[in-house]
Length: 328
Image 1: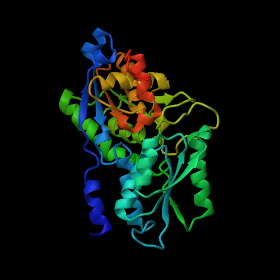
Image 2 (image 1 turned 90 degrees about the vertical axis):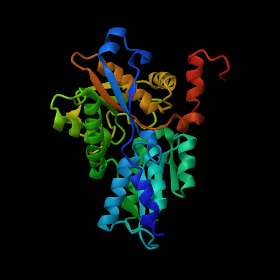
Image 3 (image 1 turned 90 degrees about the horizontal axis):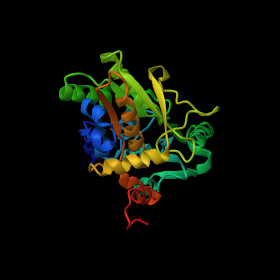
């Protein structure tokens, strides 16, 4: 079987994820608001790599192969190189293995053990950077390696690759628009997204704004430390703003703490939705958006699965806050 044949099933399984409606009262909205507002979320853990990052990585890889800059199965070809907080790294490693493309990933050392082990399982090379230095240091290290070894590496650059946001414009955004409209009779009034590379907010935001010019777009910003895995701090001088992020789309920025994100993950788990902290942050912010005048429907994403964070102790902490006497 060719590399393309091996990858075909994986590629076919990316996207078209379920849209779930959340119980707004159980999530903490006051009764009056809970009665008038509906919140919908795309269940991105259903992608074969377990996260929303499968979407942009699949597009960027296929475009690089079509352009001839990556040559699957060629021992003399370049390695794919990029920086990642973990989920994109898993997608690169998974699809690289299926397509026959060697992969090198620069990842902050505080990425969860589950993410790192999944990347290694697919055979990708990992370069771990000092977690204290954050995402931007990993990004700069990938840039340095690409510049120093242009014959060895193709820098896919998810922070600057237009295939990233276009995958969300053509895929995620189109799905949200069609599915929310089918459920409610109209496009969503608001869209909430965290910012990692900026691809999701830019692609979905542009697609929704093309359909409805007054769509309210709320950006989720993590606290600088300890931060929220998958979300990029953007508030301090010197923070790298992703090249593909269309900041003109953003109507409001909301800072969400790691504690607020973890608390919301626990509430989601009580609804049967086991999600990671960036999903908790998205839903926390979606409740904030629901309080705005005129907002009756909110769309957001549940980016990955909570199983990817078991080793971080997040669930033990949330269980203690919930009063579970068996938690340690």
